Length: 327
Image (cartoon, rainbow, N blue to C red):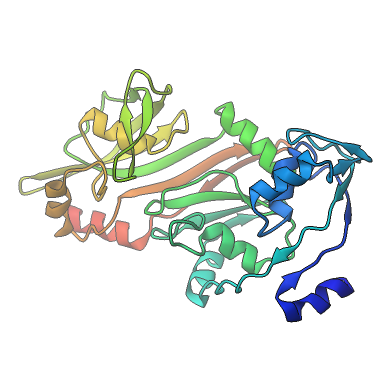
């Protein structure tokens, strides 16, 4: 830290000097505006775009526009940006930190895969200071770039990928876009799912209600969406029936599996958004207290050609529900 930054702490302001940054292969390919937003923590986006428009940001001594993509070997000039320091955020609690560290299923120099516990958001926002990614960044400050490869709903447990290098992030995003990453989920649905129903092919459209709540519906104007299904086990207890299914999304849309199950007529139990309250209430007596959706397996090919398969064990709370239904 330079002398100006040390002196300015008494006044509550940070006065950084001009920064000259050599762009390497890890940061190459990013738009310059997105890169600046990431490294200039606490600086409003409007300010970032202003310094680009005014020509204060230079690449190889030349002015650039916000959509310029950084290249390996570029020399980026970042002007001094005065930022009033905010009160430091509270660190994530020891409980969530320990929970995430103990949930790591796989790690190498570029990738982390965790068995995300239900109830923990993948990122902060909407009143949540720390999610999975903020917690990992906090406990691993030595990592230059930790980024979510994909997302899971807060109440969904299971396999979640976090890239430790931007080169791997770009690679996996391309693999996901080309449907080359296999994601397999376990879901407990209401009723008796027919063995012959192996595909739900229905376009999905995001909607925002007046309350601000986001919901997804089947709509011809939506994006193409396909999910493959396989029956794993059926349960019958008195008049109640349920089916444990394996769901493999071919595409990756928001709430895809949840809405496709609803569309098929067999909504996921414990889903407070898409499943009728009376169905959820009846299955609480079997110990089901949350969404029964678990990302059980990931299959992918790493950049070096190595095939990787990762299994996430079903959490204890969901396993106990199945045991109760069996008995």
